[in-house]
Image 1 (cartoon, rainbow, N blue to C red):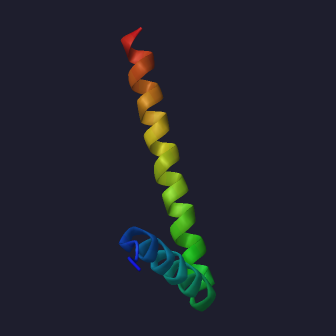
Image 2: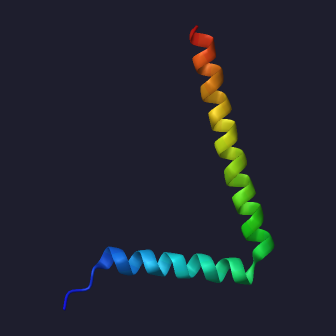
Length: 54
């Protein structure tokens, strides 16, 4: 029986994320907040660029 390596790696990644959130919820929340802020900044920069083309 062949084991799908991608499937195993995905499950390991999910398990690690769950473990990290349980062990350090404040750090996890801060990391998600920073990622969201970075995405928002990137979207704003792209919007400014597109606006400047007009």
